[in-house]
Structures are given as structure tokens and as C-alpha cells.
Image 1 (spheres, rainbow, N blue to C red):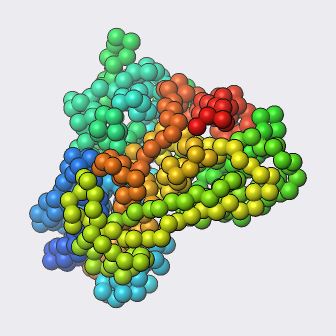
Image 2: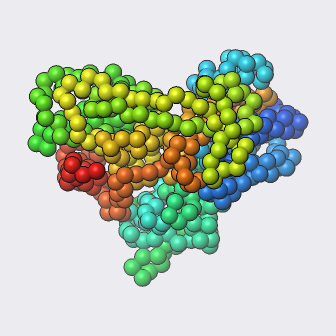
Image 3: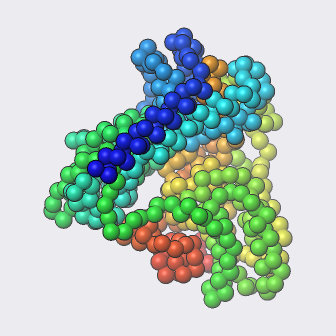
Amino acid sequence: MKKYLIVFFVLIYSATSIAQTSSVLPVLSKQQMLDDFDTLYHVISSINPHDYVRRKVNGYAMLDSIKSLRKEIKNIQTTEAFYWFINRALILCQDGHTSVVRKYLYEYMSDDDRRKSNSSITDTTIIKAYSKLRSDWLFNIKLTLPLKYINGQYIALQNFSVNGIAVPQNAVLTTVNSVPVHLFVQKKLQYKKDLHWDFKNKRFYSDDFYNSFDHKLTDKITFEFEGSGKKASITASLSDTISTTNKLIYIQEKEIKKVDYFANTKILYIRMPIMWDSTFYLAQIDSLQNILPANSIKKVVLDVRDNAGGNDGDWVSVISRFLHKPIIRTITKCFNPNNFSKDRIYADSFRIFKNSFVANGAFLEAINTPDTILPYKNRIGFSGKIYVIQNENCFSATGDLISTCQFTDQMINIGNSTGWFGGFGSMPWVYILPHSKILYWTEPLLDFTNATEPEDLFHNEVKMPIQLSAADYAHRYSYKNDWYSKDYLFKYDKVFKAILKFDNSKK
């Protein structure tokens, strides 16, 4: 009885919340919906440069897929439904820099774009209401299967059960709703954002692929597993919870930025959970450099796992403290030749981009002067290696850091590929749809630096690739204390322990 009461109150809360949100949203006519969609398509097809990559690498026509959605507008009855519809169109880009965004990014819109969209600061009330639709949807999702995509398989990290049916640890997920799991995931391209790309198996993946907004809260989903010669089949909805003896934690909510010196190994360890607050790191680093003698630091470790980005200047200022020579980066950034706002791209000049695997005229090149990172206040004369620990959840400014490792022997990135777009781009451009007032952004640039084939445009190179095992992930996610503490790093962290063994003299 208690379970039904909880569901009842959740439904009542959701209905009340939706009613309050709906009162703020504009009422849209079919023609206004069509106009907004056409505006969106015009912006994405003119500004975003990723269609080429999606066709060549991921095997689907991004712009054609978005355009084909237009015919569905005749069936949309509410502004809320139109909001989710626009989400589908943007998700088809499968890029974190092309998506619906929150109201704080409204200030990044150009005055000209606000004028063209007949927009003012009062629109932020509507934008906030859209964000609440998403947060309410996320609030009601309880299902978290302990799955990890490792070497092409979805593996159960622990024993768990759903609705009384048990699944053993290390069981492999084979089908979902009677469809092979990998085929099932590929059909989520317009419903599940931030899918990663598996370069080896050439497919998209996500540990929580089932958490996509095409499923209603009560829709039943059947998952079939195989393990130890046995099969297990569970049926669950997004409102269900799993039963397990040990709750796993996938992302540490209370991240601690830190600078630690491990005297026994002469390692300076820097944990940056976000590219922000460089003044904190620089103060700690400078105070250490003032008291440590020469040769007291053998290795520098910059740990950016799960760092989704921020400001490039923050990581640049940190690594510059340890450089023994400049990092000279000649970066080639290209843009869509249909771009109607070329004046917003800061470059000396533009020209048709010429490349062995791209047809002439497909991109324009923004010619920039070489970008150099200079050593700064390297008081102890450090000349050793800077190890950048990454994982699949690094993005944006952190992707720029990862790409920079390819320009210098002093920096070594270690961990696993992100499967997301990395490389050097720009701050995404922010737009608003004129009638619905849905705020979104899109990426205007694509990094062609050192690219010899289309897959290189992801810039996912890892100098020291290390893939954690299911047991490694299970231990990490079940560890209740700080994953970035000295105790955990030295005793259990497979990637950090690899750095301990690595000889600095090796190239």
C-alpha cells in the first residue's frame, strides 16, 4: 500500500508542477511551431559544421534526420510537447555544444540575434519554465541499473534485482525489448543526449541508454542478461528502483579541488573537477614552488576525470607553471560555408579549406596565428612529465587540454577515450526561437588540426590508453570516501598506479 501511495503523491506533484509550468509557457499555433522549427533548422544547417562527421563516421545524415521531423508537427498539441520535439531535433546532433540550455546563457546571445527573434530579458521566465520541465522529468526517474559499457559489452557491476528477479554480477546485457541491445541504443539518437562513440565497434553507447525521454515513467522495459551459463530477464519502468546490498555512486557530488604533494614519490597531484577557480590552484602551486627545492617534483599529475569543461584559461595557467619550453600549437579551425554570421569568427582571413578527405568548398578555414603556451614561474625548474588523467566524461575546455597533449612530449594523457567531440572550437553560439522562446546553443567550428581521416575530427587520441575492468569500476563506485584521496590513489586507482610505474625517461 505504501508503494502505491508514493506513486500517487508523485503523480499529484507532477501534475501540479506541470500545471504551474504550463501557465507560463506561450500558447503556440501550428504555424508558429512550423516557423520555429524552420528557424532552428536554418540555424543548425547554416552554423553547425558536424553533418559531415556524422555522415562519414557515425553513418547517419544528421541534417536530413532533423529535417524529416518537420512532418510530425501536425500531431503536436501543446507547447510542452513542442519543447520535447525541439529537444529531439537538437539531440540528433549528438553534441554537448548543440542543445537546449538554461536561462543563465541568455546573456551570451548577441544583441542582433535578440532583435531578430523579438526577444527581451522577460523571456528568461519562459526559459526557466522549460528547464523545470526537464528537471521534473529527471526527478521522477528512479531506475539506475549498475551497467558499465566495457570493451563493447554492457556488464553488470554487481548483483542486483528488480521486482524480485535477480541478475548476477558480471552478467552481460544482450537484448532490450527483444531487440539486440546495440541496435536498440542506435535507435535512441533523437531521444538520448550525450551518447559516446565506440571507435572500435563503430556504434554509439551510454551506460544509462534506457534513460531516454521517449519512455514514459510507467512504460515497461524488458532487459535480458546472460552470465555463467544462465539467463535472467527483468522488466522494469523508469519509476522502479533496484535492490542491492551495496549502493553504487557513479559521480561524486561533493567534489574537492586539491593540490597535494606526495613526498615519498615526489609527485605533485592536482585534482580539477571543473575548469574554474584557477586562483586557488595557482596559490597552492606557487606556495609549494616557493618552499620546495630543485628536483623535489619528479612528476606532475593533473586529474581531470569527469571534468565537463569551463574556461581554457584555467588549465592553461596551471600547466604553464610546469612547462620547461613553450607549447606551439598551430590550430586549424573550419566552419560551415553557409554561416550567415562569419563576422563573429575572429580570424585574419578566410579561405576554402583544402584537405585530402574533404571536398573543396565543404568547409571554410579560419586562418589564425599560432597559439603558444609559454612557461610561467617554473621556479623549481621542473622538466619532467605532466600526466593528464582523463576518462569518457571529459568535454569542452577539458577536451582542449586533452588535445594539447598531442603538441608536446612533456604532456601525456592517460585513461580512456571520451567518444565525444574534443579539440579546439569556440564558445557555442546562443540563439532563441522567436515564438516558443526555447533557448539553445550550437557549435560553429570544427577542429581540423592534424586530421588525416574523418575520425580524427573527434580528437580522442590517448597516449597511454588504459581501460578499467568491471571489477575496477565496481570497487571505485562502491568506495564511500574520496576517490581522489592519497589512500585511494596509491592503493586502488589503476590509472594512477600506472603513472607510478611509468619511467619519466620514456617517450
